[in-house]
Image (cartoon, rainbow, N blue to C red; front, top):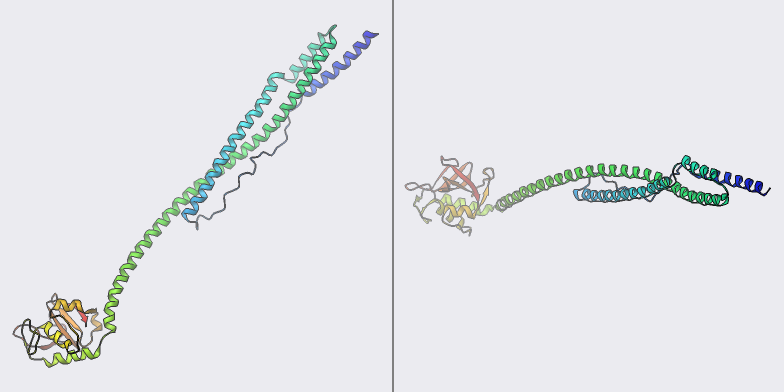
Length: 331
C-alpha cells in the first residue's frame, strides 16, 4: 500500500515536472516592440533656405548636420553593442539548455531510469526545471530587447543616410553661396573703383565747373576791351606791353586790368585756369593751340583776338584758324 502511494505520488510529480519543462523549453521567443533611448533623440537641424542664406549661415547649418551625424553614428554603434549582448544571452541559453526536444529527452531518460532513488531524481529534476525556467525568462527578455534594438538600428541607419544626403546638399549650397559672395564682392570692388575714378573726375570737372560758375563778366569784358585796344600793335616774343606783345603777354596784361594775376607763359596759364567745353565758350575765355605753343582770347561770334607771331600784329582771327586746338580754359 505504501508502495502504491509512493508510485502515485511519483507519477503526479513527474507529470508536473514534464509539463513545466515543456512549458519553458517550448516557449516561443515572442517579442514586444520597445522604445529605446535612440528613438527621437536627434532633433532635425533648423530649416534653412539655401537660396537666401549667406555662406556663413549655411556653414553653421552644415556644422550642425555633421554634429548630428556624428551623434547618430555613435548611437548606432551603441545599439549594435547592446544587440550583440542581447543575442549573446539568447545564444548562451540555447547552448546550455538546447532545444525543446532535447530537454524532453533528458527528462524522459531521468524518469525511466528512476529506481529506488526516485525522490532524489525528482528533486534534481525540479531544481533543473527551475534553473531552466530562470534562464528562459532571461533569454525571452533578451530576445524582446534584441528585436527592439534591431528596429532601432534600422531607424538609425535611415537617419544617418538622410543626414548624409542633407550634408551633401549643404556642402554644395555652401560652395555656391561662397562663390556667389566672392563674385559679388569682386563686382562691388570694381564698382567702388569705378565710383572713385568717377568721383575724381567729377572733382576735377567740379573744379573746372566752379570756374565756369564763377565766370566774371566784368573781368572778362574788361579783358576783351583791353585786348581790342591793342589791335595793330606789334608782336614781340617775350613782350607784355605796353606797346608790343606776345600771345601770353597780351592775355596777362588784359586780365591784370581787373587785378587777376597770370604767369607770362602759356603752359603756366593753362595750369592756372579751368577747363571748359567748346560749347561753354564766352568772351574772355582762352583758347590754346599747337601743343600749348600759342593762345588767344575768345571775343564771341566764333572769333578770337591774339598776338600771332613775329612780323605780325595783334589782330582778330577765326576760332578755327588752321592750328590744332588743345583745349578751352576759363580764368
